[in-house]
Image (cartoon, rainbow, N blue to C red):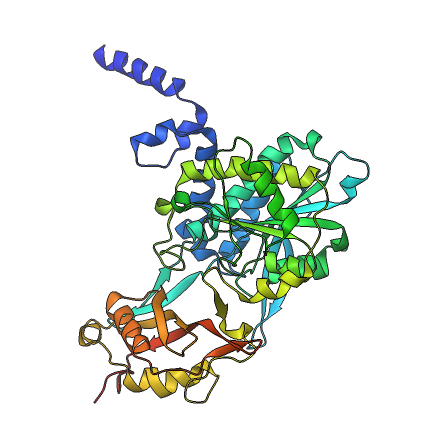
Amino acid sequence: MKHSFLGIILLSVISAVPAWAQYKTGSNYDDLYDSETVVSFKKHVSFIASAAMEGRAAGSEGEKATAEYVTSVLKGYGVDILSGTSGDLFGIKKDNGDTLTSRNVVGFIQGYDKTLRKQYVVIGARMDNAGVGPITIDGVKHERLFYGANGNASGLAMMMELARMLSTNSLFLRRSVLLIGFGASSNMNAGSWYFLNRAFSDAASIDAMINLDMLGTGDSGLYAYSSSNADMNSIVNSLNNSLQPLQPTIVAKEPFPSDHRSFYDKGIPSMCFTTGPYPEYNTEKDTPSILNYDMMEKELEYIYNYSVALINGVKPIFNPSAIAKTKTVFMNNTYGFYDCDEKPAFLGSTDPAAFLTKWVYHYQKYPSQAVKNGIQGRVMVSFVIDKSGEVRDVKVTRSVDPLLDDEAVRIVTASPKWRPGRVKGQKVNVELTIPIEFKLTKNKTIGIKK
């Protein structure tokens, strides 16, 4: 009798739990008090940044599954889908002659204004990430998974929840809205370029674009970058004068390159919302655990208010003088290596391979413990060549093992001076990222000094 009575109690408790709570995956008791929006954020991110997606490399099955997931969610939120179930396919020619197939997901919400509904505001977020990276330990090959929770499952989750809010309130939207998950953004923003130049024949009717990229680490704030477009920034300033859950900081320097660049190249005013660069970017530590979902909920409310003001407001004017700045300058006044008029040179060569062959691999020392443990792989290292030619701000952007990471940082930090890069004749700080290979073979070990 006691056993049956206990079973009745348990059945009653389970029946009283809301349906969505039965699918919570969080391990903390505090998750029980999440709002419905936070629950949705966690659901989206946990799927997109799961191990099953294998890092969502451009053209991978993980990217395809992500596209199908985004399509299903948008459709469930009442958004019309203009692309197929698996997205709008496009191809990218690879160096070996093969074709990489990626895809965009395109959703549509029609505006109510008889004139303005023929004009569009695009709200987009990139779908792909770094995929997996090889590492060999004791002669056995392993794969290191780059989950991409903040880069950019957070932005995709934001786009989908923004779609839900806009769809619910579509009767109050004057312009039409295109909601796009961009594929192959890591391949020179291929998805956004394809959409504007091949897939969407009415690109001239796009009045503005909002890009959502890396929005999960908002403890240090929300940033708004429009390449100093006065009209796009004026909406931020106007909202800051009203009651909002937060106030973003307008930045004049680009936090990082992303899909908004494709729209600037087409003369379309764009705003990129981001919480900025973060230490776990492009590492295996970019997991859902680093995201601040409560802050994302506040960001969502603000970005929704911004979106409605843009969708219903006066068409922003494009400022062509801002294009050069958009293409080259990052938030820390540093230019991209390939955006310089005169690239930095090492021992007379502007080819980064010269730095690897003449310096890195000549003086690199393979850590003895790494040799003993059979650890090898490719470490990605970024650094800045400043105006005087000194190398500084050396950091690992894709790790293999602390032993190899430390050696890669050591050898790059010890670099002799470079000839500085120039833009419009002026010396500038330039950022460069290089791959440093650590490879063990039966006959020799790259990097060990005999």
